Image (cartoon, rainbow, N blue to C red; front, side, top):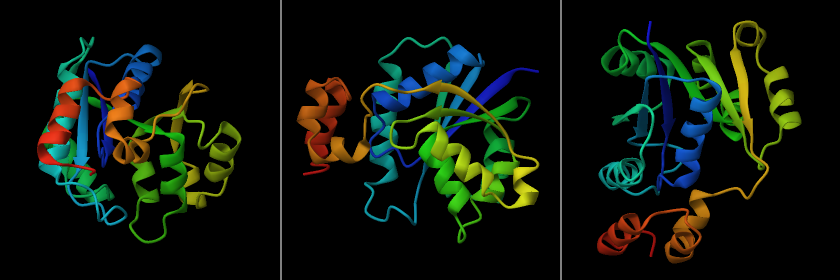
Length: 200
C-alpha cells in the first residue's frame, strides 16, 4: 500500500519551517503523497487570516520547491477525530496514513481537555519533529501524562531533532519583510501579504 503524510495546521502563514518538516519527515520515513490540511476555523486562533489567504500562501511556498512527493492542499473544519476520519476518507483513501507533527503540537494535543484532540492521537502513526520550543524531554513527559487508554495505543517516532533557529509564524506575522530577508517566506508570499494587507 502506498504511504501518505497528513500535515494539519492553521498555517498563518505557511512558511519554510513547515516545508522543512515535510522534507525531514520524508528523509526519515519516505512517502508518496503529502496532504496539507489547513484548519478553516481554529477556535484557539480566532484572529487567523482567512482560510482562502492561507491556502494561497501555502500553495505559493509548496509550488516554488521541487519535492520528491506529490502535495495537495485542502481545508478541514477542525482537527477533532471525526473530522479527521472524514478528511482521510475523502483525500487519502487507499493510502497508509502517517500524520506528521511538531513536538509542541503533541504537547498541545496531550493537554487538551476541551476539543478531543488527544483522542485523535489514536487514529494514525505519528512522525514527530522536535522543535527547540519543546525539547525531547518535555515531549516525552507530556506523552507519559496521556490518559492510559491513549498512551497504550499512541504510535509515534521522532524523525528529526531541530537544534537550529526555530521559525515562528508569530514572528513572521509581526514582520513579514524581515521574515523574507531571512528566507522564511518567499517573494511571491511577501507580495501577496502586501497586496492583501495581511499582518499589518
